[in-house]
Amino acid sequence: MGTAVTDDTTPATAPAQPPAPYSRGARFLLLLAVFVCAACGLVYELALTALGSYLIGNSVMQTSVVISVMVFAMGIGSLAAKPLQRRAVGAFVLVEAMLALVGGLSALILYVSFAWLRLYMPAMVTVSFTIGLLIGAEIPLLMTLLQRIRRQEAGSAVADMFAADYVGALVGGLCFPLLLLPTFGQLKGALVVGSVNAVAGVFVVLWIFRHQTRRIIRISLLTGAAAVLAVLGTVYVLAEDIEVSARQQLYRDPIVHAETTPYQDIVITRSTAFTESSDTRLFLNGDLQFSSVDEYRYHESLVHPALSGKRSSVLILGGGDALALREVLRYDDVEEVTLVDLDPAMTRLARTFAPLLELNDDALGDPRVTVVNADAFNWLRDATQRYDAVVIDFPDPDTAALAKLYSVEFYHLLGQVLNPGGQVVVQGGSPFFAPKTYWSIAATIGEAGYTTTEYQVDVPSFGNWGFVLATVDAGGRPPRLRLAEAAPPLRFLDNTVLEAATVFPVDRRRQDVRASTLMDPAVLEYTRHEWQNY
Image 1 (tube, rainbow, N blue to C red):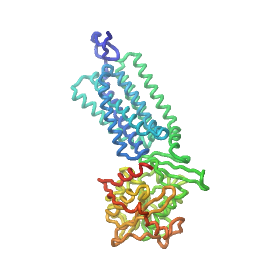
Image 2: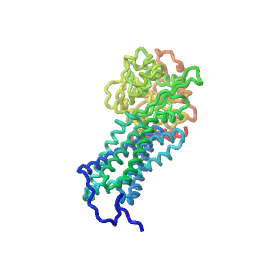
Image 3: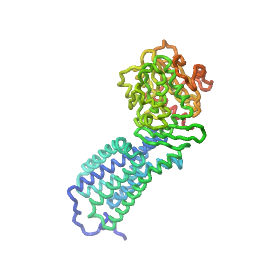
Image 4: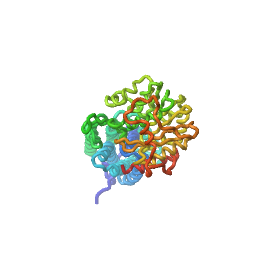
């Protein structure tokens, strides 16, 4: 019969050997490895949830699936690691090498699965489960290794282990949005973390327990770890080319600019294939924001009805591309404009990227304009200046972060910065493709104390698109949908078009839907349900 083996070197029946020598800092080094591995594990988790939010939307669902699958897999991994404790050094090194490889490649695997294979959800569940399985196997093995260095009460050992683990998770959670994402981006950031994971989990542990591990095993494990680092390094070098090729699969026209910011994925495409002039398109998180072929229809319809009254001071919320701002600045009697957009990368592009600069007529360079990069909800809570007109040009409310900008509470805050008699206009999505969403936005504005006039126009790139014009102090009368007498010459809009715009077909008229609040984001529910088939 074979002899049971308790370690990577000696059989269980061999004579007792003196304890292996450990340096005074061995315990500290092992806890440091725990700290680093925990930080890496949380970064993998955050990277999966962030990527899912960018590619699929529905951040709550993405986060719920990733966390629940990973936590379940961690439990399975902990149980699976029990038989491996007899060979804890070798088993832990193999687990960390595999975790570094899978975690480092995770973002790339999911991005390729989304762009080329259209198998994002199965791939995401598989990757999340695999990473969770390997993370779950870490703790029992690390506990065994910690006890080998110095025996202590189980409670004390657990306390030391989890203290290092949780502090590492804190550091990893902060490093992801503040350092890794802005410095390296999604794909390269995961590869960098995988490399750190491999070094901390493999080389540190092998150094500490070098006297307990046979030379041939050390060499084999180090060779495997070096191979993992070589794979991650090679993919890092090729990452940009892979990302460009995969990303291009998602868009019809050639991509001329792409970047991932801490807030969103920005893509700009440009083509001259089917039109006499170039067609420049902006996509945020994969959703079309405008086409230069017909964006004037959208922006004229959004801006000019709201500026039919007083307009010396104007507030624009969203609209970082500065196309709505371009329309506002066409009025000579507009004295000041404040534009509040969350993402500084978007307003930077509007200032510097030639195709956008050409479209917006360098609107951000106008001395009347003040740009604020901030969350509009939080900015309104502290705002003290009041405005004659407000133009709201947010993306559709398909995430929890955007849904709060379509809530009763948000419109209450907005009323605090609106001058008496001032008008607000909100883009409300498509009354044809998403009627419940559109009428929920209108109901939400009404619930906040505004009187509203709803209208819709056709924008070929979007289809039928709707807006809501609102005011607070109108004696209960809906605001009149019209152009100002001093309106500049427009390419699409006139008073006749606006008169027709208030007529909705029978099957798209006002519906009995809920208003949206922070605690009951009905608009998010409607948006996800109605747009899922488009």
